[in-house]
Image 1 (cartoon, rainbow, N blue to C red):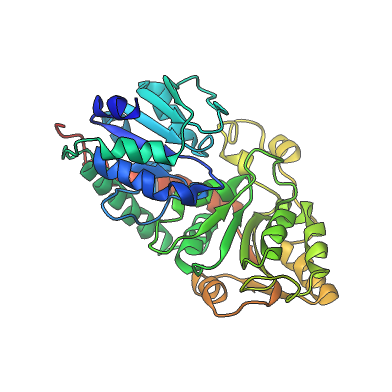
Image 2: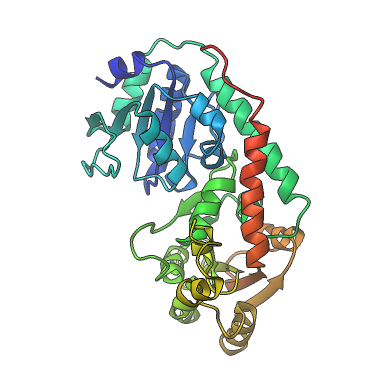
Length: 381
């Protein structure tokens, strides 16, 4: 059934949402993309945003799908694997164009808020690989256009981030550049998971990315990451300043864990990266910002703390004996994330983020991508 469905559509994409077991899908999905000629739009939490031979793996589809270029390149079909994708532009793009939509859903969860699914397939990776083996590979130029647009988007993003101070998008990009392959990345809800989806790039070595998207907001993120680290996997967690405050108890739990108390090659090793934008500013990305009275907006939708995360972390580090680094630059962050070491207990890295500059940079990044792909208009199939 999947083979016949895919063979009927030339301009398709594979969309991979969050999957805890994404590693077991890698080969099947790669085979399907190579056979169909479809690009792979994989968020990092799918475990499929990695360099795969012969597959166009997009790094920046969240930004590409906001542009006129994407609406001029509508898909005939979408094959979704995994949970509901983080990217809202992906969902809206599908809703606008209503392509044939197959959902590979072995657990029969049928998570489809848009009611877009036209073919439900409760099958596993073997069925996807089997369908790929029966497809007649063709060359349409569709995947090449996606690869070109994604490369243009990446260059435009680098042109902004490489010339400006370190803000949230730059932190998300740097995690992918700097974290060693043996580490796990745990990503908080709110802006961190969105920034990682938008700016963390595929790499040859795999990076396991965890999140509890939709489960409990920003609560319990550090505790969950501590659990991953306690399994013996060196772990880095990206949180905002509110999520950091919401789960200080997670650090207390880590304090009671001896570095060598657990098995695995890394012992206990947890790095907490805190982007401190002064009280949680995700709501300032909504259309209401700039329309609602600023004082009322801040009073109702911002939670400005009395003290910075750096001050809080400094006091906690003195009391609990963990490392604290307050940094400002990409080079400092790279040195801390990529440096050798394991079995080292807890480190907290704090980064001050100017909320206004951060919001403006996100807008300019989206504009830069739209400009970069504006002259890469559609060509004939």
